[in-house]
Image 1 (tube, rainbow, N blue to C red):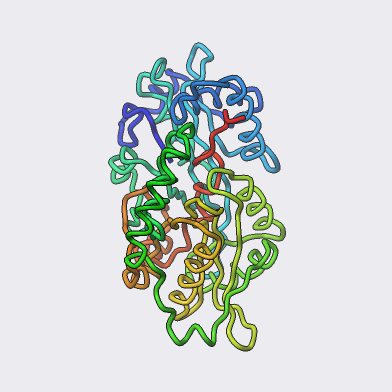
Image 2 (image 1 turned 90 degrees about the horizontal axis):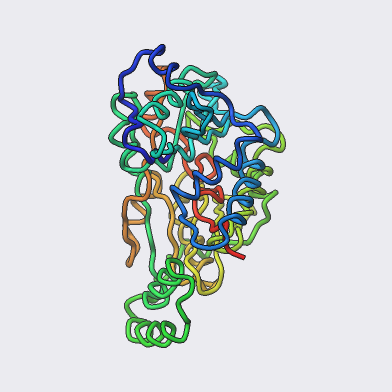
Length: 388
């Protein structure tokens, strides 16, 4: 959820007739994709080359993400002159709470065209969304402007989930990887020798921790997407407010998530006890020499620490220079036990619902949110659509 125009405030007060006189809101249609893609790139990517290629590729991806399958829940605002005033990416999901089925809206990119919008597109989009079929609305990518708007719209903020944790394995190589991500044209010969020299000097400070004795009874294995899709709902079943995936939905979501390219291939792993029972699982993007990016981690009972150990060990063995991921309250205490772990704000995680039981579950932190139940897994969160 990334409102770009501060004018499009969630707390803006306007009557419905006044809003409607400044344009209308309708579901995203195929004929909107080129204009929406161009607006997205202007606000979030600023491509210097291959702009036409980037627009075409972004439009194709948005078609796959928002228009394949069911009726589109994404929204566009059209001004009185027929121009695109704004866009809100919305993905439909299903939750359950104590056996009650709930329709959820996962809010992704939220943007307005400041060159033609005079503060009406944002309120119109939000008003249309909140009058829809959904029982709860959530986002895990709200920017700071959205956080300021959250209170008047009665969104509940989950502070822990707003943070991102980073564990550094090789600081020099990680700094070089971050510089190359920002400036892809930087020559390796200018960075790699300095990175190797620094890592050699700091090797002892950043060496992997000794695994606890309990790890001898727990082993980790790579798993495939089908195994991950089978076990994730079971491991998440102890949340009161949790996803309710129908047959084929989670495998399709993981297939879409695997299309993301910025951080390397999507990899899956799990931990098992001596009897072969799965105790935890994880999915992350990673490649040798890159920064691994966690998509999802889930565990049962007291096995969060062992699952986190396995995730970090797997990323190290792959040759990653570090790993980063969204925090969760259920493994925050385990993260504190690691050396070389740092936290920073990455994107606001918020939930809105008029159902009292949902509000209470969110307040108590008893909600499965983020990862596959967010929008950071989409290519819109990171990929360069103009790269050849």
